[in-house]
Structure formats: structure tokens, C-alpha cells
Length: 407
Image (tube, rainbow, N blue to C red; front, side, top):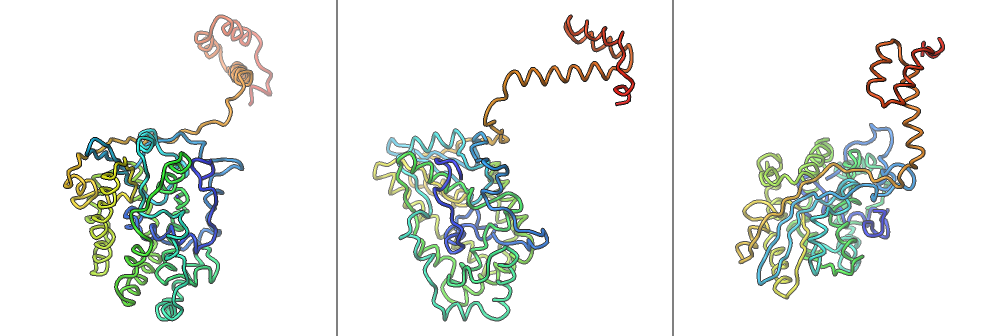
């Protein structure tokens, strides 16, 4: 999910315990847009994928080299004479997606506050996700073959042994989230939520959390150790299957295109509601959370604030999505069209005019030297100006040396 000051987190987290805070929102493909993904066996590639910063390429390259383009899903919600905004995000992305597009940026500027699922820059609020787990619970849930499976996935993801050993068991699995997508250029460091938070803070806009880290952890662990173990096994199955990378890429592409229709039909094609455990998890991720998210947005709006609420895109679609819930509460909700354009590289400095003219002259000279017949020379002269015509005729009268003809 940032090198430039207004786009990039001032610090970069390299400790997997810290990464797990963000990874709670990134774990499985079906969760990348739900807000709450996962390692392919990368050993076959012979080396670990580059870090987010290293993925930018040439030394000194920054995400500012791309023009901002609108991506994702955006709605405006009007009530009481004020406009708030709903923005469906993805919690990982490509470097060229980091800068908010003009429509999204304008909506953010027209708001008074940014509301996120979690404010991951609040260390106190994030403590439930980083504190040491009960060693007895870890021993019970991560032993035997399950522990060996997790170790294999950590090794495949280039995670040093023991890096996440003190975390809650489910978080030890989920801390691998997003790593599989690095192969396709998708990184948590380039996620939309964090980029918006940085942009808001750099412009003096307050950032609020709509949920608590403790509540999200509870959502992951379920109501018992047995349920947490069930979720761990399901996550490991998805990690080992090799399908996660494909699903992550597809979800990212859908989000970038703003394909609201297909995202709204996610349960029909995700192949993620096949077991009672999967159905319970999806219910906890979406249906059970959306009313609380809507409550928070409505409460902030009613207090007089124009809210820019940025949460996972799957929270926005369907009859239980946030736009539908807010419409039922008296908001006038309307989708705002976003059309993503291909990223255009912004040159760091324009080429000198003299260099450009020299390059054109060199191309013309090579064209004259390469003429093989009188007809080619005449065609060339017809297309050029009078000075170029004279040059072409001279070239006809004085054929190129044999060594150049052979070239």
C-alpha cells in the first residue's frame, strides 16, 4: 500500500510484527477489498521479490513519476445540506496507483475529515494487533503439522524464522498477506487507504477510525480456539494452493477498473463460500460490520462534518453495502463515475531542444544514406521540404560508399 512526502509514509515498516497490523486487512483474496492474501511458493523464482521501494526501478525513482488517475469506487452522500463521500479502496496496490486521481483528490479536499476502518498510525489503538499472544494458545494452535506448514510458507515468503512467533496465531498466518502479490507488482505499501491518510495528514485534515483493532482481531479469531484453528487451516490451504496470487491480481484489476458490477457479484464467482466456516467468515467480514461502519459515518456527518469515508470496496457493493445503508438512513446517495486512465510517466526533466533537433537530423541523415534506388530517393524528396529535396538529389548523384550500402 511512498516516497514523496504527501504520498509516502514517513517511515517504512520492515518488521513483520508491524506489517501484521496492515496485513489484518490484506490476508486472503476475498479480504483484500473487504477491509479486514498470502504467499505463493516463491522459491521457484530463485530470489525474493523486491521490496516496495526497490520495485520502483532506477535509483531515485519515485511514485511521483506517474500522473494520478482516478481508480476505485466513489459515491457522494448528501444530507442536512452537507456532502460526505464513500470511497471503496483496496489495501494493496501498484506504485502508479498511489497518488489519488483528480476526482478523488477533490472530494478529499472538500471534506473535513478522513474516516478509515483503522488508523494504523495510532500506536496505542493498534496495540491489540502487536501485543504478545498467550504462549499456551500459540502452542496449542501452532504445533505439529500446522506449525510445519506455516514454517514452509514463511520460508517461501522470505520471512526469517521466528519473526512473527509472538503474535496471535491467526496473525502469524495473516502477516504473510500480500506478499504473494509482490510478484505481480502489488504491495501493501501502495494501498489506497494509507496513501489517503498521508495526504490528509499532510494537509492538516484529521483522521478517524471507524473500528477498533480489538474488534478486528475478534473478527479473525472467532468465538473459540477451534474456530481460530479452522481459519488458520483455511488460510494455509489458500496459501499452498497457488490460486491466491491469481485471485489477488483479479481483485486488484477489478478495483482499478472500478468494476462495481462484478464486485457486486463477488459471492457468485469467488469460490469462497463453499463451507460453513467460509460463510461465517464472510458474514463477519461484511454483513456484521457494515452497520457499525455506517453508524460511524452517520454520526460524524450528523456532528457537522463532511466525511470522506475510505473502506474496503466490498463494503460498498450489494444491498447491504454502505451506499445502500446510508440511503436507507435518509442520505441522497449517488455514484460518481471514475474512469482510470493508463499511467503516463512524467519525465523528471524535458530533453534539451538542441538534443531533440540533433536526433532528428541524425535520423534524416541515416534515411538519406540508406536509399537503395532512384525511386526511393524521389519518394523521400516528395515528402521533404525544398531543402530536404535538394539533399536527397545530392544523395542520388553521390551514392553512399559500399560499406555503408552493405549496412
